[in-house]
Image 1 (tube, helix red, strand yellow):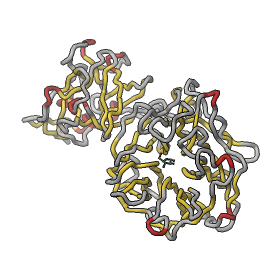
Image 2 (cartoon, helix red, strand yellow; image 1 turned 180 degrees about the vertical axis):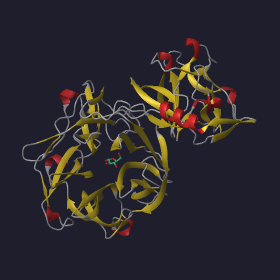
Image 3 (tube, rainbow, N blue to C red; image 1 turned 90 degrees about the vertical axis):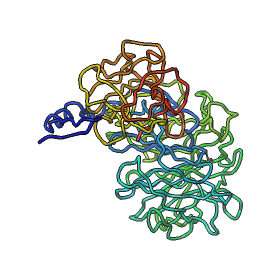
Image 4 (cartoon, helix red, strand yellow; image 1 turned 45 degrees about the horizontal axis):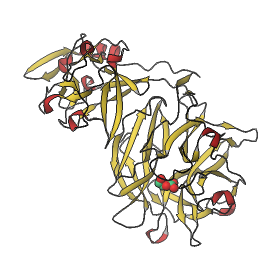
Length: 487
Ligand code: AHR
């Protein structure tokens, strides 16, 4: 049986058995999942500014998926096999909301679909919570917009939604203003992941002194369930100051919609640590390590007591523990100079992406199915073939080794060149600087790829637009010919 593939003007036959063997030999096979080995070490922030506040970080099938406030109309997502690789994982546009100032996206799986909840303002109307649903089980999407989640009467303001699965039912917790003027925590019963069964009812108001610093606020709720107990952690005080912090409720039985079913812990569970230079830690999420043995927290914080709710808030992650009484122990926010081992069981496996050029709309391609060192790299009409699968393997310091799914060879700065116009080829992977590429988010779901040796950008040479268009290295300019999206 022959597997035929049209290339240029001629048909080339690639024996199917060879393609299968090549595929098996060349496509990276996930390493045996480490039983308890920590992942590559890292320092915080795990994700730098500007799209790094109010993080939701999910671990799914050994990859991390990350969303955060963007202040634009878009929801962008990062994917990485390690926490260490998250900082330079490319942002991928997953949803155009059509609103303004997208805040606090929450990503969660219900059944076999992913749901993205976020708040935006639509043409001047009050900020409300909206939802989009994935087409399948890939958190990267695609997503379909499913409408507004009708949480408060009179189309009222509602933000920071997250889901709570309790007693076999689905609820949404969120933040809204009560008639008494206090921005409080609410809970609403859900008829489905996209529809409420009733408006929300209040279960917590910012009444304690530590909830009222710089402004009385309860928001950013996120559940934590363990050993049959349900905790609802949340952010308290105003994000505009250094005293933004985390508090906790516990469900004590009874109707979850009744405030009397929840008790509030008298003291904060996570707060500023001046000695470590961490201010206003909050608006968090929890995730498990790839081997499921550890619970981690992702949160935002500022590095100065004078910073507030803007784009200075960066995402930090650290492991939590559990007290003897069964309550979570979040510890203190660590310094950005603290080196942390990565979560247990990270395979460190590569992430598979397509690299599509913003100017040409073509995809980076192992030209003519080359497999020998020196094989050409060009652009071709995007397809789902392995010749356009590129595996990004973090090598530390925000650099990646980029190998091809068909050739198994690595993207390589030919002959250690440094001049603008230098050739890019595929070569046997060797881990040298000529094969290390810094992937830096450039906004809108695009990234630049800068070679560690040459300092030049991967470039759609001469702005080609026809299949077969060349790629070279060129002085970084930020123009569309040097912007690549991952799909
Ligand atoms: O960061 C934007 C908003 O500010 C978030 O939705 C809220 O949690 C925070 O106070």
